[in-house]
Each structure stands twice: as structure tokens, then as C-alpha cells.
Image 1 (cartoon, rainbow, N blue to C red):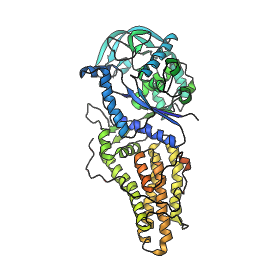
Image 2: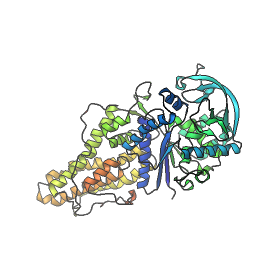
Image 3: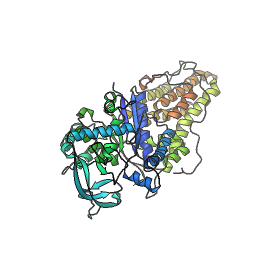
Image 4: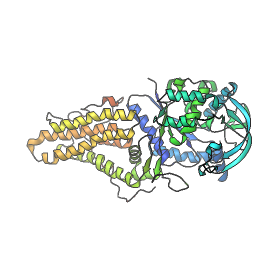
Length: 524
């Protein structure tokens, strides 16, 4: 089976990461971990976009060389990914010489194929968005909106890509490939954007205006502008043209391509990823079955408004991870948003998710289950032969949770996958309340019943620790340590079956998994 290739939009290194960056990377990491545990070989790529006019200006402003500037910003990203336990297989940096070789080879191929041409253009240019604007970008009042920032009028010569020649192909591709974009309703946005007269794409900037970029191999008076640089990382670091350009140490491109999931925010779906990117690949000769799939996530808003430095409502994930633990933040980010939809960040909600759900729900269940087993049976489990309807009901919940979890996770319903696993947690907590093992322990005639209750709780918790492992890998590994059970090599979700813990299994010492936080609100 082809390896599962998952990648994210690379982060623009002009400012440190915010919670949106963290969500996207955790989402990719969760899916990569899930697919590995589901029996797939996985290649997970992420990285940083380090070129561009804004970077050059920011570096000049603080008196740094552009490379030194982006290296400093990149450290914020890599440190956060390490803290959040985001474990990628490949790292993409657009200043990497391996990437530059592929970008230049691609551009040369398109130039030789007559797909690039040079012309002079006069028009309005958004400094913030680094793109030329047309009348379509004007508001009802005839002016360019605030989202474009400073807009200046420019006349200059540049190189263009014949994007317009491929628009009809893209329309047909989208209509015949409903799995191209997730969620599927986003395809309508792309088709709407393709209406009207197609325009070709400017792909260069003169070196006198932008020197921080990759020179065009056929005209070094220009550097490549963002599209054939940033977007190309998905294939350059996956081994595309590796033999041709002399790149080593990269995956076998024919083995892993196309990408099973390119995870992007909804703001960069159109035009970059759903228009420019597939057309670039098509123009290079990629057949339809080699076009990657896009997974489009929504935004984390604050009180209904998009996060913005100008409004001062940007949430710092690094601080949140320090407050709620990295796994506590991962859980909140995955539980409180449906992939493809928006969600509102809430200080009250993240506090509740940690103290009530993780601490009071899962953590307390683990702690009291193990404590009772140690108190009444010195931590040794005995399944025994006793059985009743309450036992059977809990076992049924555990059994039913697995296929529901797998179905949800396989279709990007991460929040529903967590909910499926959480049914075990809720049922097990109710099971403690109904069976009252602390009362059973007082009656020697109920010894077999007590044994069965303690075993059922530990077994249910073991299943939970496996299902929630992609979401909270560190915490679930600690839970299994306390249970005294480790994931066997090669263990997959399909191997989950009642009876993971053997007769006589010895539980380890319980330690609070999610200690209660006594603070009014998180610092953000």
C-alpha cells in the first residue's frame, strides 16, 4: 500500500506562531499518528516559507540579513512544535538549496514548454498581500478594502505563467473529482472563483525591488515570486526531480506521491491551493490521478472575530501549553472544532476541558480505579468468571467505540472520534457509581464481583489510552505506564479486543494524570 503522505501549509516566517498555526500542525500530527496506528506507513512534512518582500522589509527594518531574520522566527515555530509533540518526518524550508534546485528546474521546464512569457504591466499592487490587484478586488465604493493594506500603482516588466490555458481543465477536474477538496462544499467556492475571464499569473519580481528570492534560471534579472516557491515545497521535499537536480536524502517521489492530505486554512484555498497549485502541476504534466487532495480547516476566532495583531486578540499557544500542558492544549484544539468549520476560542471552555473533562473525567477515573485496585487487591487484576448485565454493558460500549472512532477519524471527524472514545470514559465513571466497589470490598461474599469490576475498569481504561493516543500521546503513554501495559510493537487499532490485560496483571502506582488547575483564567 502507498504510504500516507500528509503535509501542511508552510508557515510564513514574518512573525511568531499563533494558535491557528498550532491547530493546523496538531491536526496533521494527530492524523499522522492515527494513520500509523491504523497500519499505514506515513510521511509527514511541514516547514516554513522564508522568502518574500515582507520578509525582506522586516529584516531591513531591524537591521538583519534576511536569512538571519527568518532563522530567528523559525526557531519560534520549531520550539513550539517540539513542545506540542508534533513529530514530522520531513522539514521544508524554502531557503534550502534542495528546494531551490527543484524550483528552478520546474521553471525551466515550463519555460521550455512555452508556458512562461514576459510582458510589461501597469496596475495597482498590494504591499501587504504581495500581489497585483484587479477591479474584482475593489469594494462597492470603488476602493480597495483595508484587507489589502497599502496599495500602490506600479508599472514594470515581469514573467507570467499561462494559467488561463488550464482553467477549463481545472473546472472539469473539480466537477469529476468530489474528493479533491474536503469538506466538499468548499469546491463551490473554487468554481465560483473561476467564473469570468481567466487571467494569467505573474510569477516574478525584478531584483531591484525584491532580491530575497530564487532567481529565474532563464533570466536572473528577476526572482521567482511566491507561488512557484512556496507551493512547490509539497513536491520538492517529497523527492520530485531528485535525480535530475542532484538532491539526496529525500523520499522516493513515485512511492509517496500524490499527497493524501495537504492541510490548509480556508483563507489560502482560493486562489493559491485550489487554482494555482493544481494548474501548476497539470502544466508540468502531472496526470489527473496525481493531483493531491486538499483538507481545508476553518479559523479559531475570538468572540466571533478573526484573530488579528491589529486588534490585539491573537492567542499565544506557547503560553497555553505551559498553563494546560501540551496534551491539554492538543485535546482542546481537537475537541472544540469540527475540521472544516470555524470555532471560537474560549478561556472558560479550555479551563473546563482541562479541569472537568480531562481532570475530573478521564484523570479521576484512572486514579480512583487504580487506587481501588491497589487498596483492595494490591494492584493485581483477576478477570474471574463473574459476569452480569452491567459488565456486559460496559464491554459493549468498549467494543462499539472502536468502529465509531475509526470511521470518524478516517473522515476527518477528529472531534467525533474523541467523542466515541469518551463514551467509554463516561460509561466507566457511571459503572463505578452503580457497582460501588468500595461497598463490595466490605462484603467477602462479593469478592468475585469486586474482582470483575476492578478488571473491567482497568481494561476499559487501556482501550481508552489507545484510542486517545493520537490526540494526547504523552498523557496516554503515562496512563499506560500506570496501568502497567505498553503498546506492543506493531499494535494497530484492529488489534483492540477485550482481554488486553492478562489474569494476574499487576498495575503500577497511580499518579494524578491531569492535576487540577486552581486559576481563574488562562494567560493568553
